[in-house]
Length: 79
Image 1 (cartoon, one colour):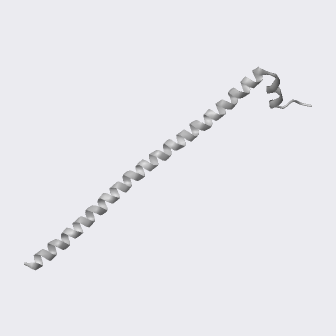
Image 2 (image 1 turned 180 degrees about the vertical axis):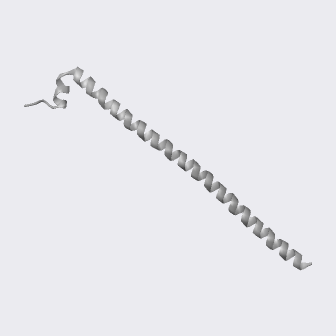
């Protein structure tokens, strides 16, 4: 009958320390991967925000130009 890693850990501190080091290393790699994905997501959000700002400014400019054109036509016909 073989002893599983958990049973060995209970009786041997060196094995426990080595296994914990491996577990922490695996957790660190996973967290670094998640951190990288969040960084990529942040860049996408920032670029989307920049694009949305440009669209809003362009739309506002178009609306203002349209309103001014209508006012100009109305004022020119009134005289």
